[in-house]
Length: 237
Ligand SMILES: [Fe+2]
Ligand SMILES: [Fe+2]
Image 1 (cartoon, helix red, strand yellow):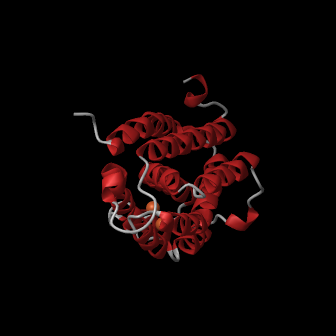
Image 2 (cartoon, rainbow, N blue to C red):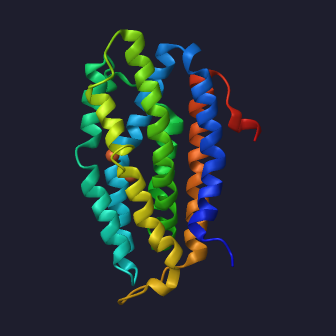
């Protein structure tokens, strides 16, 4: 029997997220504090845009016969409420003001690319968001360490801080794993999931959407690593 689609997508995602994670975690002790702070500011842009992107996909996936996809994405939107302000406040307490960030075009392009995947094709949106929600686990894992490193260097106690709590709710409390698992159920059910009027889930479009999302995340992280560390493991791969 062929492997479940979610498992196939995870393998593609893991290949790039593991490469980025390895590079970031090994370079962390010798990276400039300014470069680390810059990475946090860029990641915050995704956090800030996230609710809007998800909401677009909520509306688009209402076209599917299986209303569960849209319901699950709405649950995700509701859960994200207040997270970006918490990220901003947590870093401000640690000495980083997100408002000092200067636009970085690859991030602008990345957010526009994800936005374009969230509609109008609902199956593609499902695949794309399954991929981005899966990568969110890795993002919080590396950003947890980056924020900790910044705090340690500044003599700001990470334990008990708002910024640590921000990453902990996404990892320890299982928020991101819940988002991934919630969508995986529909990624793997495909057209059989239909229980109402509307379009069936198109597995080919789900797959395409996921691979497109992984491609744009890869391009973004490649640009982030090149700018912050001066090189990237992804360029050659
Ligand atoms: Fe969140
Ligand atoms: Fe999420």
